[in-house]
Length: 70
Image (tube, rainbow, N blue to C red; front, side):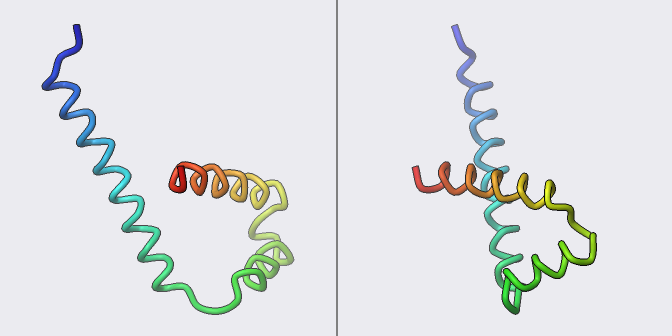
């Protein structure tokens, strides 16, 4: 049998983590300016980001997008 108190605390921690994540995304969105594609291309051209890192970030973003949109 599952402990209801543990379940409640665990659920609140998960929601807190999600809420913090969403707040951080919103902060990033507000602070961002310029053309995102151009900035990504500059990072790739400069070597600050590799193509593999970019591809993994895109996959993660797509997975998050699926979770948020159900």
